[in-house]
Image 1 (spheres, rainbow, N blue to C red):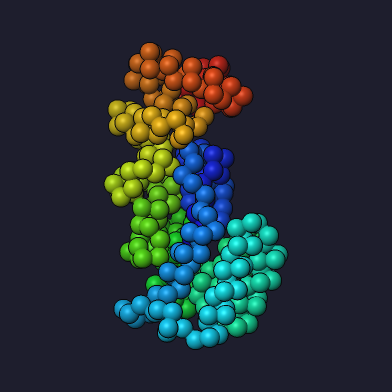
Image 2 (image 1 turned 135 degrees about the vertical axis):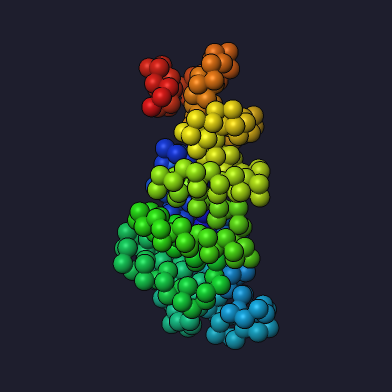
Length: 288
């Protein structure tokens, strides 16, 4: 049930990836696509289908009660995706009344309480979800991101590593992206570079990964490699953001390429004239 969103002002960059309901409160970055309700439901169903053994539970293995609970869980997920938190929580209470042992229901409960700014209840819910199903990689991933938001970085990193070994629940590339951003927030730039580079290997089309990797390399003074990755973002018009163009400007400036810098600066001025990045450009604040 991974709700892994990334918006320009919400996530996955160096100035601000993946609370997971939030990947909000992270770092500015290009969009990598909001999770749709349909894909959320599919991920939830896959995670819920995994048993604690090596076998996979299929629809015929589920009890009638579990099936009823799952239908209501999907409805609660829809409400949650629409930010109708109280309604989602109320629906979820019905789910848990039917089947209190459903790991995915406790996971969603954690996400809802996180969005409601109820940290104790969120923490308790995530822990319960994992206790009920130690192979629920989505719950482990989401709990890791929640811990990262609370600056509990060592705990978060350990859980991200664990989630990355359960790719049936969530794409390993997304877990590595989240781990890399969390490592950035913890100030562990060499570790972040490794995580993001591996994420990029697994999913070269994700602009959030390319942006964050370029940002790390820029901060580490590896400007040529930073240029390579940010160009992968900025060469696709639909992926361009003020943040990505500004990073490109700063990289070209560091490399002494005034022509490339001025070309990108022109794009920033024309496409994002009121952005804070355009203001920084006009003030010549390339190193801030």
